[in-house]
Length: 293
Ligand code: PEP
Ligand code: MG
Image (cartoon, rainbow, N blue to C red):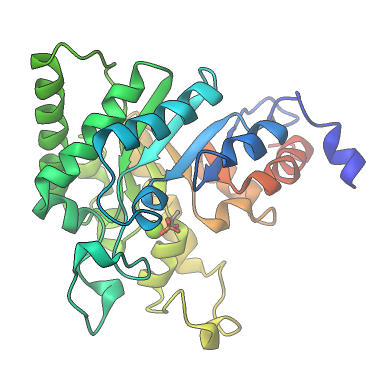
């Protein structure tokens, strides 16, 4: 099998009938780009930027973040790199944020909710991402969005960050701005979100947790939970329909995206991109290439 998969390096992720899928990878730090290139990933569909914060003793500076994002962009040499803005809180706690202990952290103060409150911290990250955009093909996406207002606020802060860079004469590119669809609310309003976003990326890990009211961290639920639950699949289908009605592309970056039992279903829904762990890329490519669809 190893040999068979190796032979798929350099080949396209395309079905027998010519339907092309963008097959990207999820990474958590700069070094992971090595694994992506080794497995012939076509881009980075999810760069979990939290590691910069989790590994540090204090807020990472704009310069530190810029260096990391630039390195990823350069390593990927023009291939798409989608950076997900800070997704801290819930299961990912950082001391120097001094967050209060919560009864239900997964339903609490996390991700974009923190970023829209701590605007200077957020803009530091946005400036770092924008600056790195000059060195490659970078896009940005926001996690845990539940309303159009949140998306508008996040985009307004991105515009402010651009103005600040412009004033300093610092170069950046115009970048695609996407929304992670990982709450049932975002699915339900995806038609509205699609009017103000350049793409959707479905985070099935959180979307499953919130749709099935099942803590993704609770091992007691592992066996009773069906990751291919029809409600979750319906959510994915609805999101894809909204995306295409608004003429934007839609991908999946949660674990479910690598489930080859579902690849054909995803293609039927019109999913344009799958972002999976680097170690799963070739397996998914093999599946795509075996389909008539
Ligand atoms: C998800 O929720 O599916 C996702 C891709 O993001 P994370 O696993 O980092 O929450
Ligand atoms: Mg998530």
